[in-house]
Length: 285
Image (cartoon, rainbow, N blue to C red; front, side, top):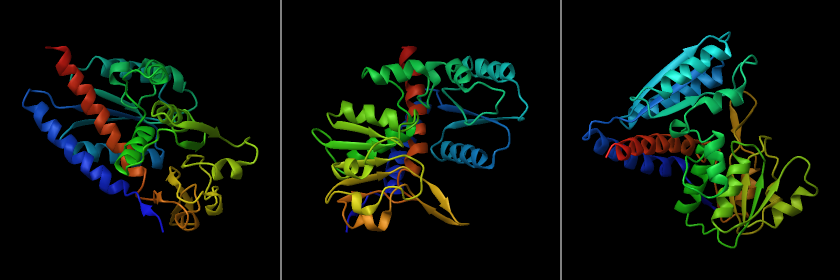
């Protein structure tokens, strides 16, 4: 049976460290501030935004939530983003996705100041990630890398297979693994013979969004499995992208769903917001 990589425990440890750093900043007159922007009334988005606000409060950060009606125009949203860009009490800006159809997501993300882009989605920060320069790293991939580190997984020379090619998880986590000297294969819905690709992996990162798509029998003995998926099956049951029970029999370490990658995402958002505030202090010295 494999070791469970406990995302809740790792997140709790990191949040305690973040809270200590927030207190340190406050002695210098700075409280890290995160602004969240929600357009419309999507129930899932409302839950995510509320969780982010609560997490900020837990570590002593300043949190401001902006809720706009679903019919908000792109120009109105851009006006708000510009105001937040120029607000010295706000160090991080998060526009909750998805946005209504009348608003161009790329236009909005590009309007956020790269210095306040704590989601790591701005093309400037994506470009810096690509070339290996210090930047705000996307929160879920960042959390995955921290989990691997905390689990004692050295990626150098390892075969890493990423299943999923999104801009939010798949592509950035592949880049991060490459920077840690792994040999990385990105797979997706058009990949031929996906089982054989997964069977060759020392580390499998599943971020495809299909319930239990990755079968336990595909996992190589002793591999590490990071399951990013959160899929609702039936009324209450949540499952990942990996067939957990069967995979756990073969993997050396595996993340559960829920309680694995999920808690790390918001934690890394807090980390990025703290870092943005710290950079503000550094720039005034």
